[in-house]
Image (tube, rainbow, N blue to C red; front, side, top):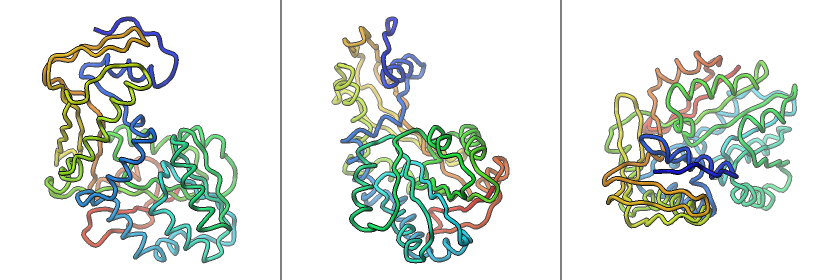
Amino acid sequence: MITEERVTTDFEQDVILGLKENPKRLFSKYFYDELGDKLFQEIMRMEEYYLTRSEFEIFSTQKESILDALSIKDEKIQLIEFGAGDGFKTKLLLKSLVDRHVDFEYIPIDISSTVLKELENSLKENMPSLAVRPIEDSYFSALEKLKSNQKKLVLFLGSNIGNFRREEAVQFLSTANQYFNEGDLFLLGVDLKKHPETILAAYNDKLGITKAFNLNLLERINRVLGADFDLSQFDHYPTYDPISGETKSFLISLKDQIVELPKLNQSVHFKYAEPIFMEISKKYSVDELETLSMETGFTLVNHFFDCKHYFVDTLWKK
């Protein structure tokens, strides 16, 4: 049982609150420490993880069509990217905009300073003329700071919108809409519903990289909060519901055990087979996406699909 908490940071507070819940949960935003960033980059290169390849194909083969659909006139724009990561796909779009001599500033937003620094250094080396302003912050806090009359194109790629349940996605997108000016654009990368085996394989790879990625959060809690999670006593388990489109990842306790967090004067009891909910990755149908755009105050401009229709980059306008 968890004793009364002594909370000094957001990380501590979220860990304690999450492990107090029934069922227990941890917050996926904390996956991304230095090792977590590297593991996720490995995930994106996995044979089973079709998402990155599918979206890269869209940007590789349809970047000119995407740029045409943006209808960017002779005006300076802010190109803002939520959760920019290493910019693997975005660099294709950036290069095309630079080649077209579009006047823009690229503003990647991420909570990982490590990833932002690597991205900034890479862009300086490969596109030295590009104006880059990284912001280490949460999305809406950064948008608040960026408020202006300048035209915006906001990117939210990699199916990161899938990390929200539908009602949370509606709230997130409706809130984001409040920071948009009339005519601003939103390019959203979304994983589509498909055969459940294809989806599950992407979250349960045979090399165990996704498992290591999830377990790394327990290791981070050990390191930062002085906990004594025994990683060998937790297993990774994903599920997929083809009706809701929700993929969920859990860590399962392999025995009845108590985990100590001495720095916080806390202890947490896990029963045998008790799950920790780690992450959701929701998939959408095209019809569901179009309904979502209308519900949240956006107008659909165009869809851009990969050749298998596994993935879509959907362009919306306020």
